[in-house]
Length: 174
Image (cartoon, rainbow, N blue to C red; front, top):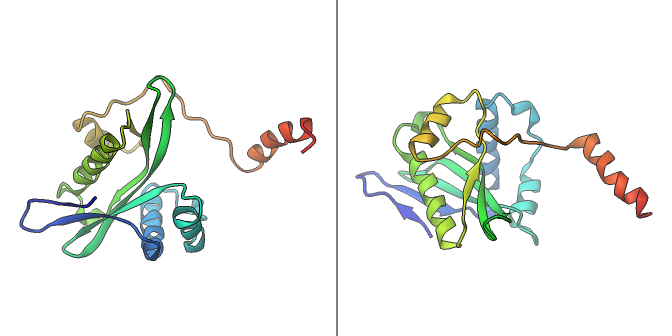
């Protein structure tokens, strides 16, 4: 499924292909720099090729192109709501290059994902936004998104993840 806007200059949204991995990594790094998290990016092209286009595809990517040039992307994957008994789409990253913002491209990209969620019988489209990113929060709320203030995100990574996994593995003699 691709989308073209009705404006005189079109935005095309297309599924990424394996040859887009250098571009996807470039956008990931631009987003991480904006979020002041560039130092946390360890992904490389080979990892993206394996995890996005290998035997087990862990996520999907769509590329937004304006006048034939890539201007942004969205990376997403399925999750599942036990309360709804249906899948959902989780948006990991949505990024439009700064010089292309304000043209409605982010809104179209999010709308595309909303349509994809409906086409796939998903009950939700969800994502996180950094607390300090007020422009993004305002943008998402203008589209009807509701902040989930009653929930706290938790994460286990690195050594803590190794230690957590070791509890079961030791108990099960794995």
